[in-house]
Length: 424
Ligand SMILES: Cc1cc2nc3c(=O)[nH]c(=O)nc-3n(C[C@H](O)[C@H](O)[C@H](O)COP(=O)(O)OP(=O)(O)OC[C@H]3O[C@@H](n4cnc5c(N)ncnc54)[C@H](O)[C@@H]3O)c2cc1C
Image (tube, rainbow, N blue to C red):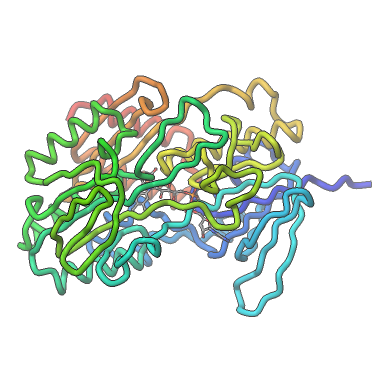
């Protein structure tokens, strides 16, 4: 008689979902059946989208990694479908296959569920965005931005910044702070790289750009020391900086209006929206009031320990950074291995602290590298700027694609070591 293996459903196949599926296979071996469900059959390598457009490449061509054969290498099945909802009591997920229109709705059983569906980038909640806004969060937005810069930009003022993030509080650990912006590496990166692009193309430079933040301090998860250094460098380059805008009220043809009553004139408005939870996660007993999935440090929901979450969909992931999702995917793999008897409790439950790791393009073959734990109560606050972090940003992406999403264990430590220890 053959025993049926526990079924693991991983919802989402981008950084957190792919990482979790691979880590589950690594740690639980052949003790489980794994299926990844995503509405698209490729991984979108989002962090390098700004770099690609400013260097003249189309991210739709260069930043997509095929998912189906990547997963098949580890005997992980892929189902292309829209996730519609969860039935936690029945341990089922409602899906609609989306390869062809007109599909019926199905219910898929699970023994373990991993929610790695990211977040909904709520551009549609910003008044005037479609008519007057730009962004860089995906290939469509990025290509639209570079087309505008090349063909229509008249040299006027540019604003770059974030709408307000609304973080839940239910089940939140005391050490996790409130962030007013979901992910502020991108506005800093885009401002620096754009300034270089404007100069190179004879259309202006840093003096054209005002960086804004809803918070007291931009990118505060990087730590006060790091942000202080970044702001000093940006100020000396000619950028303007506005803080405590609270939120974006609306975009108009002539500028941007903030919730604090302040207005800035702007020809070009480059905006990062609120990272919202998906509608079908809102109101579930596993979610906080914003709709993000509540977990402990073991990435399991306390009331439904068979439900785990990682990446941007998890309430614990603040800031919303792929690097943190990557760390959480490892925990998910260990926890499921523990549940199926393939890893000792002591090893699976080993304590960990999230780490902010962010490498942002600055244009001209330079980048900034941030490694910080201060947001989470640690004492690391490292900032490096120069050619080496840029080389690392490219090398990391190359290694990611070449190794089918599997960055070897030495990948991050090597990047950390070389960025932090080598003088340049
Ligand atoms: C411009 C930019 C630059 C960034 N740079 C960095 C950086 O340098 N370093 C860093 O660490 N982070 C960076 N980030 C953040 C990083 O991109 C995210 O934290 C990361 O993508 C989150 O991964 P995830 O897998 O949790 O979610 P996502 O990447 O959002 O993936 C979610 C997946 O779920 C699928 N999905 C969603 N809903 C459904 C549904 N209902 N049905 C089926 N499938 C669904 C989606 O298709 C997608 O594949 C950047 C973000 C932006 C926008």
